[in-house]
Image (tube, rainbow over the protein chains, first blue to last red):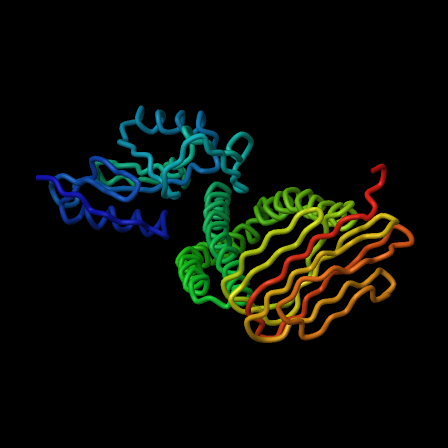
Length: 131
Length: 231
């Protein structure tokens, strides 16, 4: 059983993280996300937990590396956007970026500002960058 | 701790950036509202202002966290890297060239041979306007206030062909030189077409000004040097 939820989070880190964890607690596991959509499938309540990481400060190459690293240690990850719209051939300046991360392009890092990290709840905290 | 502080500082900057963009748009639309006296930009301003607030709220919450973490860092004698300084530096680096380009553009336009700056205070309904190197036309439902155009003319005799259409209201027109010398002044002009000859002794900035009071109609002005040099 799957369901699609349409939603946009202005509070895109903590608000989104909290909502995804609430959905997981109700037995909904994220399987896919679009610009304004979240697709869920049924799972055991509280089986998974989520964290939302801002990667908008990183270059696209670095954010892909980071995503691959998270997947290599067993987490499932999804890119998520902050900007909504259709972008192609666009370059945006991001003052919070570092190095090449100061510019986001589409196709590229634009609309991939966040990474949603999913982890099976095993009692260990999901605090990979918060040490 | 350092990771956490840097992370939240960046998140705060992202929130404030998005909120700031929305507030800037809202401000721009507010200016348009006052300028155009229309309700549509006002609605846009309200919408963008609300969007700004929606981003500002989590930004302020994150800001509190950053402050708390900074205090904790201070007690641990750690000096946090300042994202605010970095952001201000970057904004200044981007804003200064834009500001200078704007000033240069304004200066070039005011000194350009026959183009000019417009310094106006008016309200208008349904206006169609066109202006070029040697003409200025406008047609409108209702105009109140004043509009002016500054042009630079070289030495010589110029003919101003003027056409006025007055359906209702009053329209005054003046052609004034740089030192305040009045070449032409017409008050409460009716529907008419006439010519004004102006002798310019030396290269000079001329101000064409229309003062309207509930004026409905339009005006056309065209100026040419007479005789045309080299003809």
